[in-house]
Image (tube, rainbow, N blue to C red; front, top):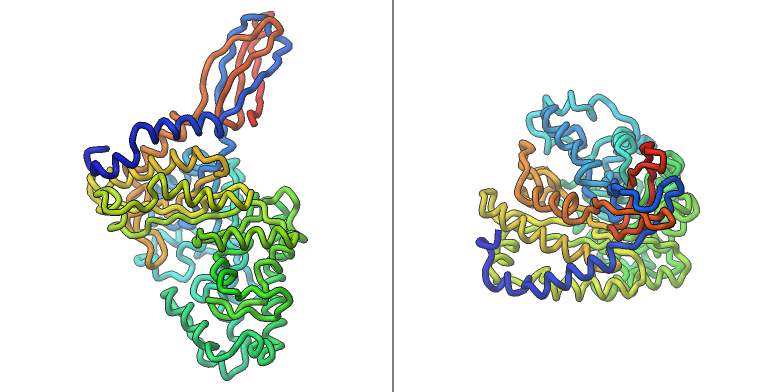
Length: 480
């Protein structure tokens, strides 16, 4: 693969850097284990086979049953429980509850593969990338994989904020609202509609709307929590709020926040983490998630923790959206996501003291041809190795698995598979890491006390051996 990468790129990812990555993987991703096998005689041979990783290797599952052919859907589903041990499920409010009081938990005909197999232009369907959630959750449970919900609270006018909620504003404002297809227009319109007023003025102008906004978001969180009752392992409770914190828009005790998106409840990040803490079981992890990986994000998380908000995991998005950016990286014209830059960013985030979920990862192919695929695969392999080696990283979630299946504005060539579900070189690169380079399968012998010791990647294992009478035995253990 290195033939497509410039000397400048290769120098950044040189042999010494690779050795450092290997050493850190050995330190942070592996652990020692000793298991006493009472039935085994000294010197018994034990086959040690890793079944699952503790580390999260995830992807979103937004295209569930939507790929247009049964064979494509089947190949897509096979990835979950094999390459991916975690799936991010879409709960974007605008499409999850398009009508007030009618959340799309249960599937209708429009959520079935039979429906999508007849759709000529899936991107124009209102529920594209937004399947009903119950079938997806049940599928993930059947595969025994971790489930991550995304997102509960977000101010985004195009992707999250329901139009029916915005229409509860006084007629003077709600009559001018439109439903937008492009995110920038949606955000700017909601924000600019109230540009002349301060947050305090808006609070005084819209007391009923302020109460309704608070009530509806709290109702949404509670309703979802009670519906799933802990079946979903983790949630992005609040998405992309760091800009509002950085700009001083998060004011404790305030009624409304004049968010960068538009109108949100006052101090909404702290407020709704406390709401979530009250309704989700303790074993369900509560995440914050953002693309703004500056010191202000770290300060926001520290502020939330200082105010007794339960924030369990810190989400960090790292998108290389534009194909040209990946070409520039390969050509040595950009040091974006270089080892030094990644270490600096992750070191800064680690100041918050929380596990870090690389929650949304995009790496585009510069071109769809073989050379472009090799560039994507090389960048992906190096970055996954580096991210995996860092102490605070607990998981990595690839965003768009299939080419041409992203949201508007996201690249058409950032998948691990082509649109007709043919694997790309990046798929093979990640599969080799996860299933070969980072999986422990070995043979060892019991000591004089019948105990077997080994060092392996953290996760679940099956130990197969024969007892003193020659009978086959098996033991499941977890290496932590």
